Length: 345
Ligand code: NAI
Image (cartoon, rainbow, N blue to C red; front, side, top):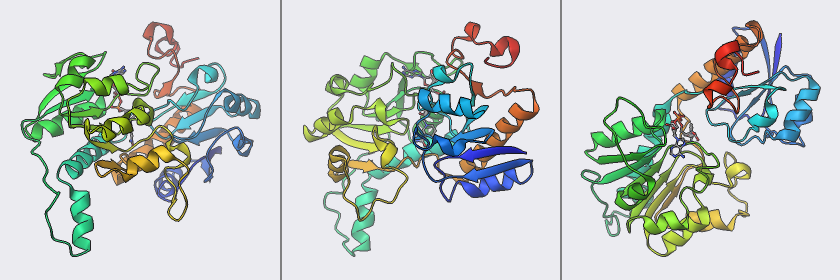
């Protein structure tokens, strides 16, 4: 029996895991608390720890898990910027779900874009109050506008297809351009200066942290719409707020926020929000915030559970081999041992 402790679980996480887990010899323990140095002791006695985007899997946490005999950290998400994979190397193997439904995120980005430019959020509130006035609801056509897509991986390319369906012109920036596509790649400067809409679909790395900062905003068109469904820290939120206050940014649609870890995924209504910056952003008429919801479709939840269970089974039943293992050397193919030994270490 493989024992797995889940951190940061919500009611919507459990059904799919219980369904797939019941078919196998796995015992799940679902905790609501997030993983950090204060809560890692709860994983004692587990074979595997399953974490999500805002669990803090730092070196101290990894060392404790290693001492407890935890062999595997199974991320039930794609991004792994919250895991110190360098610290995990040689101690605890790390697996993730590289793709579960890129459509869920790309479609959410498109939903945010349409909501914002056609003022659907305002119209919804008005008509519920029997206010049928159209004043202030004038939007703009997406057709013919230029969208700049930063990161043309799985999600970015689906978002591009959606934008093309609307008749938009697409330009993109990615240090590793996708081959065999007809995407017009430009450098970041050109993307910032030509785009009416900018959508971020790259991972959070040292290179991409605050890729949208004050100087980037300065180079953008007046009235630009910025979409972020990737990771909060891609945007310097203070610079974003300044750009909005200066009327430079036409709208911002944020599914993620740099300091979301202690705020998102919880019901904070009735409480005073201890984040001035987020409060100020939310108060802006041209900002839409969703709380890291882009992944949340039935298809995605089902695929996440299935792949996570498969990752765990593969690791434990296949001599530690799992195709979805990752390490800090993986992106330097010749240095990662997986290509030779089928395992990162
Ligand atoms: P992917 O790995 O398929 O694509 C990422 C792309 O970004 C790659 O083409 C890569 O070359 C590119 N990239 C790397 N460094 C870059 C840089 N400096 N500038 C521009 N592009 C760069 O990843 P996928 O599946 O498309 O996911 C993208 C991001 O979406 C994830 O990293 C994650 O942060 C976010 N995400 C958000 C979710 C949500 O619920 N809001 C759910 C799932 C993913």
